[in-house]
Length: 545
Ligand code: DGJ
Image (cartoon, rainbow, N blue to C red; front, side, top):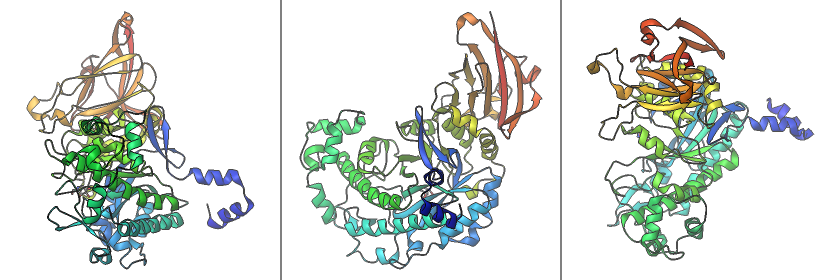
């Protein structure tokens, strides 16, 4: 809406029109058992990728990248906003990098998720402006137990959080003025991979004093409140000290590194809350935090501790209500395991960093995330490095064409499924067939292609997404899978393929390509989506007793 017309409507107090302008703000909406992102008044799937850390600092570097991202099927780009560049001098803001992002994205019909590289980026405070970094008396650092300063702003200093909150609020105020009509920016990530390392607890004087202070009532209330159960790790830590309802941190949780991590998580989350709330007041976009995940066997302090990890979800949610959801950066091979750990109640599922662009498992991971976990988005990191022949582009193109079919089915029971072999941290994988129900049929998916030599295929890269168009007609998108069917009702007899075809969705309508039969369905025995390509197939089944 033109700003003068908007101002006139405000003056005239025309509520209906104001309300419709308001609904254009991207927001999170609960649908059945899931939460979706709405943009432009409809559910939106982020077919995304995240820029490498330094790319968005230079317009000339960025310029040639946009068309490639669009050609790779993306509809959204995750891009950093650097505190050091937007506030090089205290209170003198320069949003030219943000405006460059907005202009480039709009020119290429892309949306943005902005990443606020503020006080912390991968634990460290390297994105704080010089005037912050070089003034440790005013902006104190976290310290190790021997008193050495870390390159980490302490979360215990009011000056730190207020400076960050002012800058973030200025960013959101700027967006409110330059993006209120288009809403090119869909969501904002607040900070990046917050975490404490190489010790579990900050030992700066302010941190020490907080450690020996009473645990805040808000947390004690959450511990003892009826309602959603606590994460077992938190429940165990609390029980170990006798489920105390008052006392200092050591009294309530003990003194080991697990207790130290709980303490730091509470205070990091409270800091992030202050920053996020200051920004939301200017523009209420959905906001989230991302986590660096934990390698098996590592203790707090040995990994970036106290970030928004699944075992700390109760602390983060209680201390940071302005943060809408927690999101994982999944670089480890066990994508399915970590994704399921972040499939949390009452929040959307989004992977802001789904490994490095070009990863061979990206297609299977993405289809699994959208189909099995109702994901709102998927986003490999360093997306400008995506090889031009990456299969992800075909998967994104297919997903874009069926976006409405997918979002309509998410959260609503057995009308959509996602499947891929689970891979362990050590890269071993379970290629056993998987079963799920859609419509009137049980689907059995095999990940080993029967017509390709075993040594020439990689079943851990195979997977797909299926959805029910009706009780007997289904759409499957995927790679390297064969599917057989059985009626759910055993009395219905055996299932057979009435019709199978490959094709595409164009403007919401199915456009068939080859009719698949004969060798392509193994004479009606199965549906086959070959490896090495992303196919879309429609199948209609029937049963005979
Ligand atoms: C996770 C971080 O969030 C990213 O910004 C980037 O540093 C990648 N790790 C790895 O390069």
